[in-house]
Length: 234
Image (cartoon, rainbow, N blue to C red):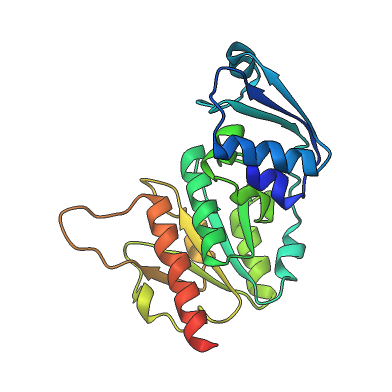
């Protein structure tokens, strides 16, 4: 909520605070940010908060705001030093939100989602993103394979993560260039067509009896390896 008000990318109509929640620093910060932005703050009952909330555990505060406006893929390509995260078939909104949070913290410049068979930017995903949605441009495309073809044609390396990838994450030499990190769904991973469109296939080295990471954990490792290599190159 604080990031929604702080970023100022979306119009906020009203902020509602629960009368049943004792005042504390976080709620006071939200109230102050809303007032500074000229947004009306109203105290309402806990039942009213629960009624208005579109996600679980609203924590005593709800805002009425304009929806997140998707970006165009071309806009993401034109960013300075593009660092994109592409999700292929990730349907869990909590994983989507967690990936967005890691992407923002690592310095990613955009996220690409498929229009079909993908978690949308729902209230649950926005909440799990913990404010990242206010800072990360998101393009929703008709198909991920076609989007990867477009990115490659625009000079952006498309790096897909697959358990059988021939290269290890730490060995990739293209992460300091314009890059799109491509991650697949839990269980099935990258679809065959998406895998074939990736210019580079890499794996995250694993130890122990389990063969894979949750997609949000894999995204965090991949994103921060991009950040590490770029930091060393500068």
